[in-house]
Image (cartoon, rainbow, N blue to C red; front, side, top):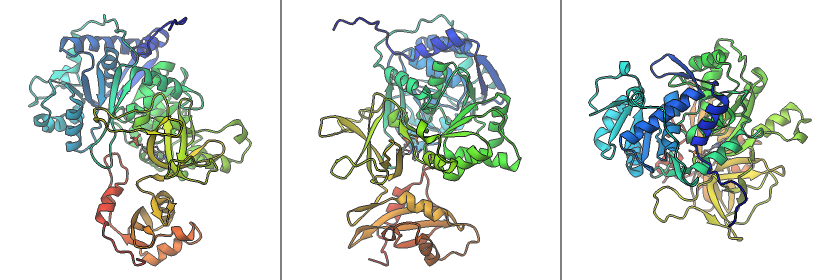
Length: 546
Ligand code: ADP
């Protein structure tokens, strides 16, 4: 084809080159793992990323090699994002909160040949050592003064590794569809699965994420990603910050409310992002100490549903706009953001807040639909719920090194869709709301019951601390809901009390058939309820109604 336009590949190196050239003096501030505050700018970050790229060549890293990290959000991790992907290798961020067996599985499956890690994780890495035979280089992300005595042979020091090299490095040009970075999904069942992003998908996702109706980023922002760089690339913020020239503030290992609040205030943070649990710690720190944010304007919350009370607290008590977002590792990760349209501006505050309780509408690039068991598209009436399918240029096609496993589902027009595993409604304005995970939904007599709705109702009872609802076998209805709940300390609640509590709050046929009280519920490494464990435990549970 005869092209009349320039052919410039969309490469990750172009982000840091741009930030250096046009926002060179914009700051990047880190609370380091060693404890001090490190401050430099995009020009210096670029220079050090190039030094790292030179050092990688020297230790024998070639294009396509997988370079693993076990690291917090810091300037060194940022340099690895750019230095590794920019030189054509693959930055594989490993979640240090996973169980030992999962980390071993992931790193061997990815065939990582280098591991960069923070001081915090030295004890973990020392224990992993015998199980990581493919890793040739271990690099501790610190300076010479903090190098510990370690049993890891030939342990390299990050600062020494890059200091000996020059910042003269020309970022290579290669096709934009080259693999750039790798994340594994935490996987509540089975082994974790790898999602391999490309340079092109990363750049397109960064553009989309920066848009006003997405995360709304600009060169006037100061962004503090609380979401870790090992969690779906910190939702793309390390890339989108460079693309917009926003100041970046990286909290290192200091994830407690007091440390975060100090950084928010000292660095004049305007936008932050993280999962609901992290905000609980921060908000209670603010409440306990009667503090207010003085510069924070917006916060992106996602990863699991934002509790309605949290949205109201941020918006009404602290005048911070909540951007409720939904996505998946498989989607790079952004899919939807709950942000109003012009016609919603005249609604009452209550109605506006109700819109924010939904997971939101797709950002440009993401298409979605809900389907029934037979794959037929369901109406956008905000009521019908079905499996949520997505399509788009930064959405996974197949998992990394997963054989011939078919991941996508074709529709009647031959278009392929990624099944998210979420069950959702879509309203006439295109706002999606998650009602369940498809494996958690309760299928009773051909109808579906949302386990999340029942759990939300249960935890709205003042004596319930946490609740899970699972499907158990019923001879007549196939499945019926069983509520498994943790009582608050000293609560004297009976089964009947909680069953009666559901009356009038959900449809009659939704009310759980039985209740079991337990002392705690099982969770995954990323803090999500482990319902598969409960399903195993209660596999032979006999309902009183059966
Ligand atoms: P992450 O690690 O970012 O949570 P995962 O890929 O592990 O991403 O999990 C994605 C799943 O998390 C989604 O399919 C959905 O079930 C859940 N999720 C993400 N964001 C939300 C949200 N805002 N509300 C409800 N569930 C969410």
